[in-house]
Image 1 (cartoon, one colour):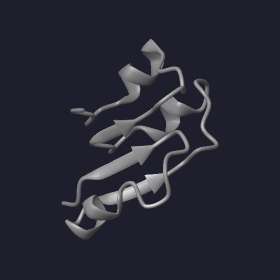
Image 2: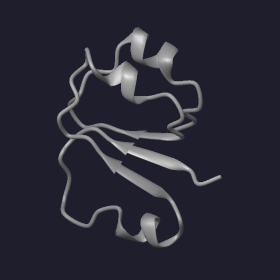
Image 3: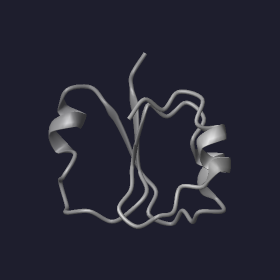
Image 4: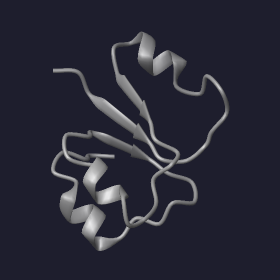
Length: 67
């Protein structure tokens, strides 16, 4: 199973190129808000945020997030 990495904020272009090359599935969803984030989290192993607020509802929905 490929580890899914959800990127919820804009970052430097190509920031995750090395992870993708190692087989990680990179999902860029810079449109997410604190309200829509929980629905995007099931099955995600790594969540990357800079300014998106991660609510307790998002944490509860994160069934696989380890980092």
